[in-house]
Image (cartoon, rainbow, N blue to C red):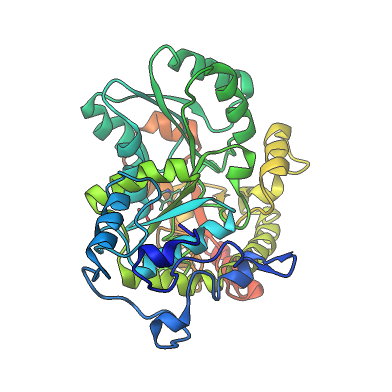
Length: 437
Ligand SMILES: *Cc1c(COP(=O)(O)O)cnc(C)c1O
């Protein structure tokens, strides 16, 4: 989409997508945090406006009929790579394209797509890859709506699934993939860390297993990187082919929008784009614009939230009313050497979302939650503000009792997402709330 002939194809209009060299100063490759301020946007095309305007239009005027035909070849997948010009707002738009260019930068992905929600991104990915009789192999547990989509909705269309636990060893992954390989495996779908167990998936082991077991066509490996990405985990580097995001969380980061993203190779993105263009799961221009603003501070916000979480968890772990803190930063030197090893190979930070197990049960957990003053009682994560919730009674209420126990979703579990407030203020809030327990 960045080739030198684009000006001719759009009938002489200036280039919209970034030049291949737009990520360099001399020989220096720029960091994503720098590129978020300008990459993919040319003010000359918008009256010199420093920031991209929000393009509220349903359709775009073609410079000439030949350009219109050529753009439609891109939109319909007749020619891979997406449209070279703007066509119709169900397919593309300037705000969404700038967002996609910048999203890809964080993980050095070849291409990226923006969606109206994390779930519409995941659903579009699945619909573009599976057909009746196929199997999806996935790590477990997954985000509840993703599990519902695979088992209950795709299941109605004859799609099968097999899963392995998030923390599975190479041998365990091999066993499940070998069993699945007797049918047609369309996709291997991972989520790491798993929610709310925080178990990390060994993406390198999944990749090695996939490559060993599937000799011919290999099913792509997709992974939901919402909890640690793009700052603390970049699974394309460990061999994943496709990365999925709920941009509602850390990427949006202000709890004021819902959106999703998919990153990966041009080949896979072309397949997914064709489905998105058909069913219309792209995000709207206003949301794309808000995400552009969010991405400018992504590194600042995530770094601060991560530092805050480290301090808060350090305080909580020794508190007499706390049974256990499930925080990735405590894996090192802990009981589970295998998880610590995955953490060292896959993660550059522990994130800011963790599990707090209080001594007691629902009564104690509710007393704690009801006494918090700074932290808000709400589900979701990755915002500037600290949130706390009760998985057993809220997000995972409908999960059967036996499965809840197996996943460690007990009545004394509180799920916390730390924001960018002052760390000592947060500690004071938790300290006072623990007094009420
Ligand atoms: C929130 C979330 C989703 C779903 O995203 P929406 O933007 O709410 O559709 C998917 N996966 C994970 C891990 C999430 O936290």
